Every structure is written in structure tokens, then in C-alpha cells.
Image (cartoon, rainbow, N blue to C red; front, side):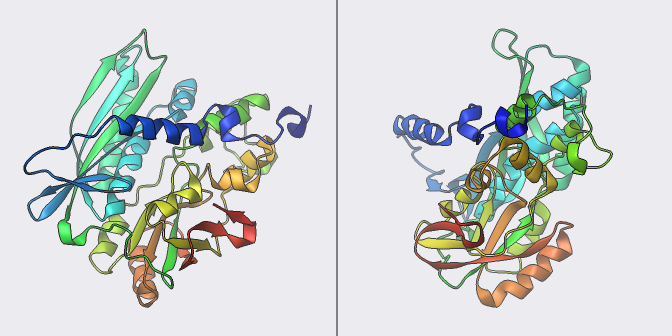
Length: 347
């Protein structure tokens, strides 16, 4: 049976994750939460991360996990990279408001607290902390054999930013330029769809990658590539350039961009060439372009929006502090939403 017969236009929703339903569920959750603290610590809003006032500063909090990527780690008995993913998914969100990460706490829910497993998870967390210049100051490990099958790893990041230097995205305006920073691969989103594509094509994580996409590597090796951490280059950039917007491209793909400003149109004219892993997933899952670009990062893990006059300085600064590919990918126009004209995609 061919891939096309096995999977007819695979989508994230068909694999078990309905983003629209998830958005509605979040709205309902938030509708029940209305109280705010009295006194110091007034909420200051936020997009990728929440903020509270703290004198001349804002303290920033965000929380996230690794998702079902941990199932692949368990299947391969390779747990030393998921800690990097956990750290990355948090610190990359925190920097989107212009903040510098300070501290981190992790939460590990596990059915069997195997010391071999927890030690390996800790190695990844430590590596992520080094890459982020952050301290892990505590955490919680919960043994939940009747609730958890395997383990789930999440964490919370504390960051700070001067209140007059918060990057809200409100200053984004037509004529601004969008600069992209390459991803390291899938990062830590869309793995429910990824795993379903692997399963429905009777492939195994220990199989060598088919079609010559990654010579000499197994499918599992590529899928466990850690999420790129963008802290050092963004913190350096914030000291030199008046940045208008910062976006971590995670679940939702290009649909993440309008979170910064819903009153402009984000036009992606020159997207990154997606890594072979995305070509493989699209081919073997028969996934259309729009679905790919609203589920995965498709090669761009982070986006920076600056005024046209600051483009050269931004590119120079980012390239000095990053090993990732960096380039101008688009511009800001009048309108609303996000589009990639060359791909005929509009959100």
C-alpha cells in the first residue's frame, strides 16, 4: 500500500490535536479566571509570556512542556535531550516580550521514578540552562502511576525586563522588515501528527531515514534533535536595536505572528527552505502546504521585526551571536493576518 493510500491528506486534527478546539477550550478556561492581585504585582498583560509590575521592572512568567516528543525519547530509551526542549520552549517564549531569563523550575510527572531516566533528563535540563544563562532553582517530581503512562516534562521560566523596554508588538507598522532565524528542525511541536505519520507508514524510529533524506541517521535520531535556544542572540540584539516585535514560531506555525499585532499584515516573501524532515513528513503524510505551515515552524524558529533602517545592524548583531542561518524573510504591510504569497497561503 502506498503512502497516498495509507494517508489521505493527513492533518493535525485528524491525528488527534484540534487547534481550533484547543483555542476554544483555552477561552473557556480563561473565562473562569478574573481575579487579580491587589498591591505590587499588577498584571501588565503579555502575548507569549505574562508580566507583572515590579517597581521599574516587569517580572515575566511563562510555562510550557515538551509534549508527545517524550514518547519517542522513551521508545528509544534516549532521554538526555528532552530537557533542552523543555528549557527552550520556555525561554524562547520569555524573550518575546524583550525579557532576559533568570530562573527556571521543572515539573516531572512519571509513572516509575527510574533514577537512570531522571539522571538523563537532568542532563538535558542542565545543557539547556547553560545555553540560556539561567539557573534551575527548584522543581517537582511526581510519581503518578495511575495517571501517567511514561513521563511528562514541563517547566516554568522567570525573566525580567525594564518596564519601559517591554516589546509588546504595538509599534510594528507597515514598512517594517521581518527577519527570520532558522530552526534546528521540528523543535517540540506537532509530534502527535509526526508519530501518526510514522505509524501509518509502518515505519520505526530505529529505521534508517528513507529516501536518502538523512544519510546514516535513523528516524528517531532526527526526530529527537533538540529545540534551538535563541536567548543569547536576542538578548544581545535588544541592547543594540529598538526591536518592534519578537515571535517564537511554535505550534501554529506562521499563525503565531499576528499574536504580536492584529492590525498589520505579516508578508513572508522569502521563507526558509524547510529542512528535509518537513519534506519527509509532507510526502509520507500527504499533508498540504497550509497545514504544514500552521502546524510546524517549517525551518524558521524565531522571527524579529524591526524598522527598515535597523535591518543591517540587526542582521550583523544576530549573526555575531548565533550559528543559525539568519535572513530577511518578509515585510509588514497594511491589512491584517499573515500570508506567504509564493505558497498561496493566507491566515
